[in-house]
Amino acid sequence: MNVTINQQAATLPAHATVQDALATLAARPPFAVAVNTRFVPNTQYASHALHEGDRIEVIAPVTGG
Amino acid sequence: MNDSLTLYGHAFASRLLLGTARYPSPAVLEAAVQRARPAMVTASLRRQGINATNAGESFWELLKRLGVPVLPNTAGCHSVQEAVTTAQMAREVFGTPWIKLEVIGDDYTLQPDTLNLVEAASLLIKDGFLVLPYTTDDLVLCQRLVDVGCQAVMPWAAPIGTGRGPQNPYALQTLRERLPVPLLVDAGLGLPSHACQVMEWGFDGVLLNTAVALSQDPVAMAGAFADAVAAGRAAHSAGAMAPQQAAQPSTPVLGTPFWHHDKA
Image (cartoon, rainbow over all chains, first blue to last red; front, side, top):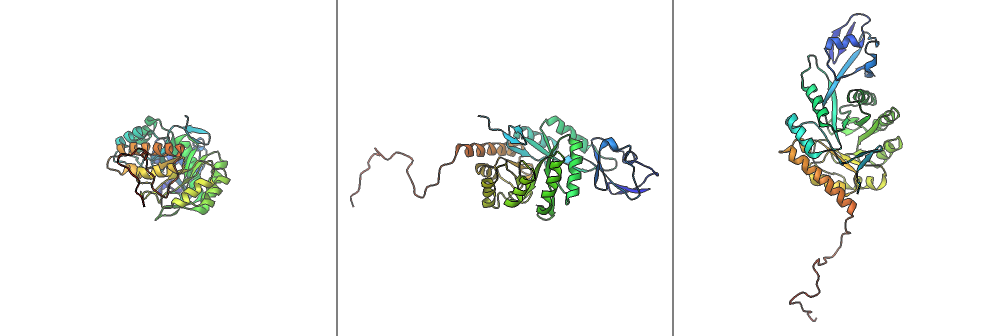
């Protein structure tokens, strides 16, 4: 299936989960995830199934005001 | 006398909250925080790039080393959903229920979206967050934020990053008179005198970033702001004299040498 991960196009196998998307990104902690602007807790990475066209956001701490 | 800042039942020794962005280097940021000893430091969240650099991890290590409570923000969010999701992600990453709620309505002025801010605050309060909303100085809006459960409100002094100081003293002073909750001035301060001024008006604290980070010597400026905040608070607590219309000599007149009374 075709998805975007942090606005980059990616192709994942059918039945892929958030865990698979994170592996594609080689994400390194600390980070948090949202799919289609909805928060996905880290306890659900392996069970949250992705679908065609999903927009996955993986965010990490940065400086801020 | 114990004069700590209390937010949502949590006491803080300092009344200064300091941002972590735009410093010349992480080392300068760290030294500035150590000099100011703020109640909290703000932080944010951004996309982790493919093959992410070590910059994010370094900042994370710095935050842990500082040992100062972290106040994550929702900077850059333009909708209720974006702000709520960002807050939820921040809670997981930083392990804190504190959130500086920003819902931006205009990219040029970075003015808060006053129509959506209250709804976002209400949702987050119900979800257990300790919300510090960044808002304009509109009295009724701030009252609505209190109505939905915000136990503190953070009105701006001027648009973010402008350093112009309080643009509407009347509005800010009216807020102070009308709202019983802690009020922190957030954004737009440029000088320690600005911070001292709002503290003299009775504000409970200030949150600033750019005024320190973009100064010629951020470490020294961090100290100057910390001192100004403390001075303003002390002045407010002490109670200022009432202004007088006419001059009155502060030195006793009685016994003044060479003094004589001119007859008309």
